Length: 152
Image (cartoon, rainbow, N blue to C red; front, side):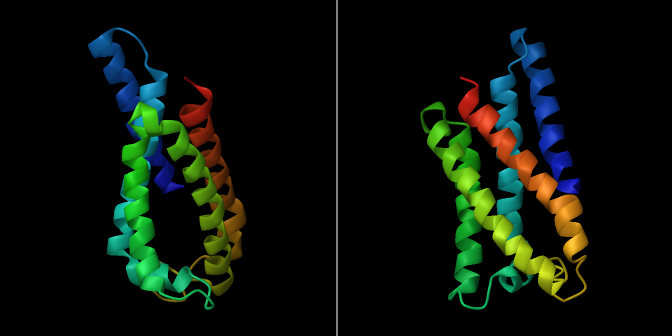
């Protein structure tokens, strides 16, 4: 849940900044900027913790390292896409699909007790999946839907 701190912090800083600079609370901008900062941060982590992330991918999927790098680039692109109004809705839909697919990798990771930061098998396991990762994924999906699709 530490990752959600990035989302909420960026959101509140952007929200307060819009009030100070423009004189109104721009929830649409702040919500999308918060998710953009979050998803760019996680995209960059694909290049820092690539060995652990490779371990998350099910065995039957080929080119694991390439896939980790590709998804990192796609996450960074999604962060940019959320900030471009003409791309926001499409980006939000694709990001929601991505969050669902990534959760499948998280199930695999939790079953194997993978620690992506150490690239070993000392991870928190299934308790983490149900107590932290699933609620976080639901928040990310709801946030992306609300700020990327619902608000206009």
